[in-house]
Length: 181
Image (cartoon, rainbow, N blue to C red; front, top):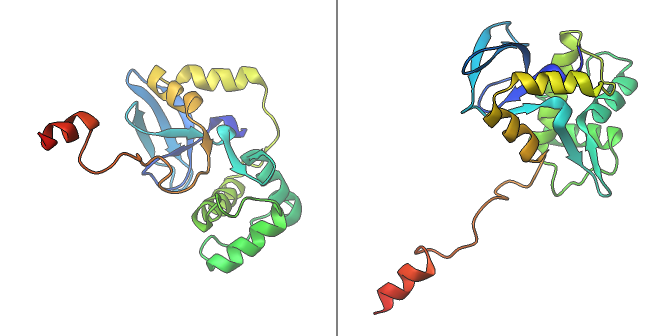
């Protein structure tokens, strides 16, 4: 199985394998404990094949990062995601020397290492490019809001708090003008 059928679900630990479609969403099986959950449109779902890591020059697909880790580790598990921040950053620098240190946080690196180890543990080490037919099949199983969330929003790691509004406290200009009267 390739990364096109592996999901990350916001608010849920670990990774999930897409199994079947339901009326209200789809069923996913946890790679941590094998439990199945129903995933609805209200969940923020990311396909691992759609995630990328910022570098100083481009965005590198997560699959390419996993391939580099697998090559370095000969396809075996890597360091624990529970090691110190410094160790994680040093390890990741060895894998991807030009990663953008301002936009890729230690928590992102921790997640990548944890995901890689989880994929190796479950023998899901096919990090090659998948055929478009498989990717389209997976996207067809998702409901329209889920598909839109996956394809419409960039899944790259971004600065924390990057979506904050720059408006001043006190609401809109209209309410501010009304208070001045």
